[in-house]
Length: 445
Image 1 (cartoon, one colour):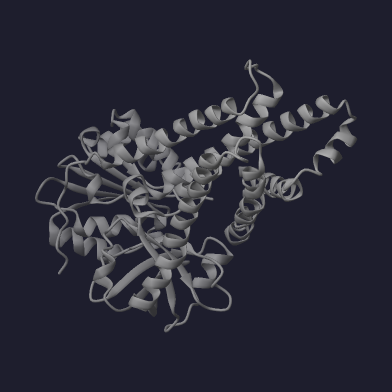
Image 2: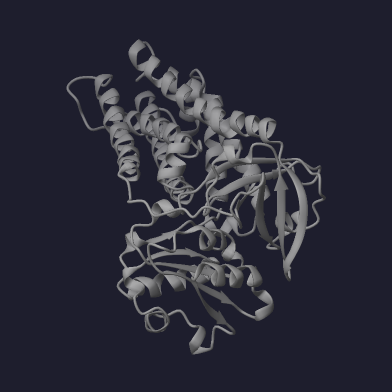
C-alpha cells in the first residue's frame, strides 16, 4: 500500500535558485566589464578593442554558467526543474554564440586596423598568436553545434545523433580555455587567472560528479535490471525494473530518470522517462510509446538487461501543490507521471480530478488501473475520448469550465504532446488560472 504524499506549502528555495542564476549572469557581466576596463589603456575609450575584450570575457563566462545549468546538480534540478534549466541553457547558448561572434569580429578588426594590414593577411598574422588555432577550432565547433540546435535543424536529427553532436561542446571548451587564459585580460594577472581557472574547475566538477560519478554509483549500488516488459496499448509498453535498495533513491511520483539501457544498440543514449507508478518492493516502472527509432528499440528490450538510471529529477511533484483541489491533465502517453500522482496525491485535503484526453478508447493507457484507483480513493476521472474536431473534445476555456467548474481555483498538473499541451495551456490560462498554479515539464531537444 502506497502512503499518500500530502501537500506542502511552496518553499522559497525555488525562488532563491532562480535569483541565484540571475545573480550569476549579472555578476558575470559586471566581472567581465571590470576585467576589461582594468586592462584597458587610459583614458578609457569605447573602441572595438574594448568590445573585443568585454565580449570575449562574457563568452567565456557564459560557457561556465551553461555547464552549471546542465550539470544536473540536485538543488537546481529539484527546485527549478529540468525543463526550465534546459530552456535557460538553450537561450543562453544562443546569446553565447552571438557574443562569441562579436568577439571574433571585433578582435580581428582591431588587429587589422593596428597593423594596417589586409583582411586575409591580418587574419593570418592574428592566428600566429598563442592558442589562436585551438580557439579557431573551438569557434567552428561552437557555431556548428549552435546551428544544429536551431529548431529547423533539430527536427531533421534523431535525439541520439543530436545528443552525440552536442557532446562536441566539451571538446570546444577544452580547446578554447588556453586562449582565455592567454588573453590580455587574464595573462599576468594572477588573481584573475586563479579565479577563472577555479570557475571552470567548479563547473566541470559538478558535471563530473552528477553526470558521470553519481550514475555509476547508483548503478553499482542499486543494480537495476529489466524484470518484465508489458504491452499497455498499441505502440505503448511498460518496463518494470527490479533492483536493490530502491527506496534509497527517494524517487517520488511526478519525477523522472534518464534511462540508459546497457545493450549493444542502446547504451549510447539516455532517455528521460517519468515513473508511471510509485516505487514499491524494490521496483520501478516506466511507460514508453513508440515515437521513433530510439524508443522503438526499448519495446524489444529483454529481461535481465542492466540499466543505468540517472536521477531522480523533476519538480512536478506534490511539493508544487499549494491549493486543496487539484486537476491532472494528461494526453496520450502523458498519463505516465499523472497516473503516479493520481494514486498518491492526498485526496483528504481536497478534490483530485484526472482529465484524460485520447483519440480512441484503444489509445487509453492504464484504463483499468485508473478506474481502480478512482474507485478505491474516491477521486474522479473525466474522459475526453474521440476526434479533436468534436466540440466536446476541444480544449477551450468554456469547455474546461463546463467540465471542471472550479478549474481556476485549482492547482493544475499538465503532461501531453507539445500541440495538446499548447492548446491546454492556452485554455487553462484563459479560464483565469494563475500561471504559477500551472505545473508542467516539457521534454524536448
